Image 1 (cartoon, rainbow, N blue to C red):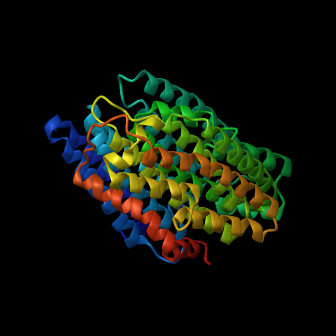
Image 2: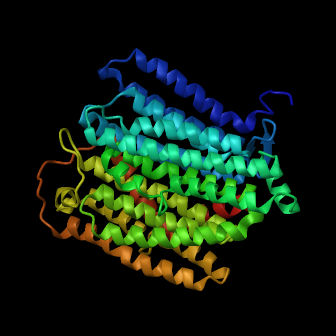
Image 3: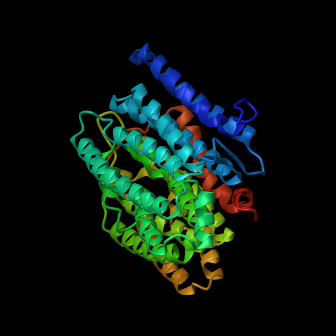
Length: 479
């Protein structure tokens, strides 16, 4: 294969992102605290440039390059664009928070960009090795980000828990990959799928490997019973890191599940569907029930994340293109919603004060009616209240599950969604009907306010006109 601009076009966004992150890392060395906002500006420009290059390289045809290890297809185009835009929101929200806490350092944005690069590699992976490479790049960046606040004991503790459990999960995934490689003798997904379809591979070894691969995927999603790290890490990490951790990686985790389970091991769909049913029900049940008891808003949103993962699994386990597109729609919408929810928490925080408890939302409407309204739209979307986009995200997933005659599973999902609505509405009640316990003015920079307005109103806009985003997700799977 000849390497030139034409043949390397599918990988242009990743090359640009890698180059820009390295340049920003060097530039940041020469900046002082007063000029550090240049790193922030360059990081935003990098994300916007990567979106432009992703669209430039996009097309309806599937392209496989780098000896079969990298694929660019309509699914990767949509997921990468969504990932980069959600990260853009996260970077803007983080700036004021990092300034207020006195921890605005260039490493935050550089680590964030390298994490995004890892996620983009995962999205376009066409072999087990490429997936693992992207996954580890993402994980190493996230471990460092969780411990970003050097003086925070809770941050260091959260990072240690995340590192130990993350290493365990990576080991399980790698063990599963080695079993599949041993059974098939192949590493690229199309070749693995071909061997599985012929039935020449040892089924026992394959299923054994599949179990470990599903365990690894479940950990990255934070699905029950591999959710132990989620509440502790969300609570212990700086809120700006929790924002990033709770949003963008969910899009990459969806891509990880599709590439591994559907592209690579679609021939074993009957086996992994049964596993995902159990994981989905457990995640929705535990996530929604435990969230009710939380008074720490970051832990509440952590358990809420676990329940949403259950819904994404429902779409994937449907095993149809309709289900995959519904799960993809849900993952992108949830990432945008989570970014907005944690973004509001960063805006309530200020110098010397980190908003963490539900009580910190009390009387938010009296302090800032605009911010309270944005948060209400975001919480309603998480709860699935019409006409916000969260309602349609849940509806499309339930429709996909019902279409494969798993009506009981859809009924379980609706039941736990109704329970989950309680703690979202409780947060809205606190904002609108309780008296504020803090009268400090809420100050936010213009860029943060603009982004929050776009984010909050997107919940309403995509809810009223879901066709554009849904159409892109369906086109990604040829519907």
